[in-house]
Image 1 (tube, rainbow, N blue to C red):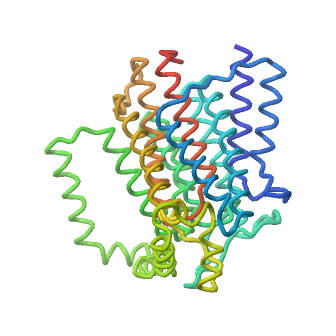
Image 2 (cartoon, helix red, strand yellow):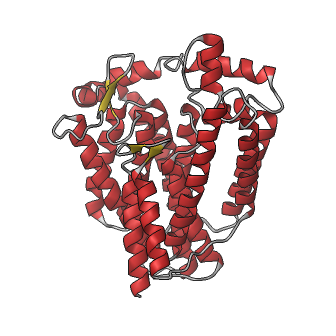
Length: 405
């Protein structure tokens, strides 16, 4: 029992550290708080001789091959230095993934989600205080976009990436609300306000899809429920002008609509066109890991990222890279679908149903994050690997029939 509490403590430390990536020390790379937490976790695991639970699934093997290929391709690319930095990042995030999944294996779903909610709430409070200049911690709390908006980014260096962390809190809050833990309304409201202040189109879209997915696993698709959704939707459309006027002073809906009306995607469309041109020149093997920005500077005189991770993979890894990534993604979805994914609010659940609850919560978060990655560049998103690692821990526990209460 003592070992379980040690793992719970370590889990809180590493999760909390993951929510504050901007408090880093610049070495050859950014040494972030979660990396320090990893060192501490490894130390405690060795001192107390705690077991590391790990099992390799087929989708992980495919993803490992994908990483290996991208690193090899990067070693013979135009910008070898950037490729090498990303390769080092892959090694660190894989170790992070192994540690977090092992810790999650030893905890209950409720303990895990409570941790996400508590650490996430602290993250939101600090982020909002920074945004409103109530506290100053030496990091920028907001940035100005092309439309003149001050966008919330808090302890993250990008408003869009902020939404990926915010997604974790939104779904965790909904989980507690479905279990009649109404105190979760507080972090839910904080997370929704923070989401609105980010003015992230990808963030809005990801959250909406994730919430719909989460709710649909909760209810049965009967004629009555379908009719209710259609009726509510029709009423919202009918009175949309009145609703917009009512909430405009608080949520700046006209500004949000204007951002959604920007068909250029804040310059993303041109960047995607540039990326496609590079892909057509190197369709099979790509231009090399993390090389788009260097190529874009070299040929178009703009040092920008692609702002679409899937295009990043296609352009930098070519058809080989995107095929390997697609294979790992398909195997992951196939593995998840092999479980019974149904959410229940009943207090007395069979052990297998309790594990299914954890799986569905993590999947809802991941679905929203996968959508957001269509508007972001980079391979190493700590928020996604955190959720993937927790999902891995739950899967290992379920496969071992090691149900916790």
